[in-house]
Length: 330
Image (cartoon, rainbow, N blue to C red):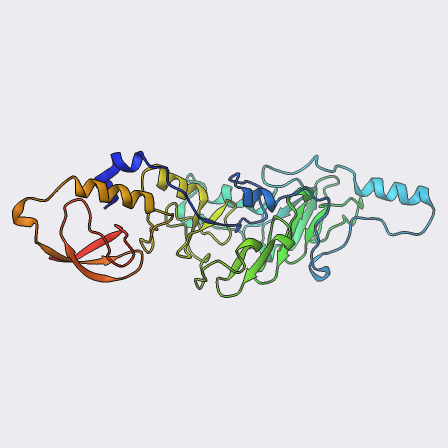
């Protein structure tokens, strides 16, 4: 429907009123640059998680002489931010319980085992909660999952979540474990809340304003088909409540697609576009045989069914004045 007036749409600057959600997992700290994202990622030196989820602290307990404590602290800090992969800075590697191989992290495993060159029947993801063995990057000792190496006593990750088997030295991500989601997320626990109905974490700014959609994040992105719940990339909550990758939404709007791929509701304020449609339709009268032709329409924005005059460019909803409609009969 929108394609009929692309030249007109190009002349209008669409004002987006989208709601940003942070469904990003603990993996990366990639942001789209919006003000909401900047608000949620202030620098902080430490990340607080539930004590039952943390396998220990990397800080030396007080007591004993100062020189011993200094040596112990220095040992804990040895190799800090010097080891890891493109996904994490950490001082350990993991043994995959599924194939028994050693990888820097679960994402390295998944990328390797789901490569296009791997036989399709052998492709698989690591069951991350089943990881039980880690290998210290400094001394090479294989051991059960824990924060401090049993051999060289180095801290294998400043941030450590026993439930997720997650190690990370880069605490600027402000990781936290969400019991509702069952995984670790980034951005600081104080900046997010878990919606039990939607089944995921959203920015605290959306606590009283987001439309609840059951299992909103437990599906694939309607554009790229990546599972949104564990996505490493920014996710946007549309006004209709459906979710989509922020970059995928940008790709849509760059191609003049302004309707939700799932329910067809408008993804932003289109009032200026509808005004332009009014002008174009007024300047383009239909031929006489079609001037009094009536058709049935369904409005994608408000859901109203109505009878309106037919026009080849678009049909306007009499209830909400939207041109985001579909002809159902006539």
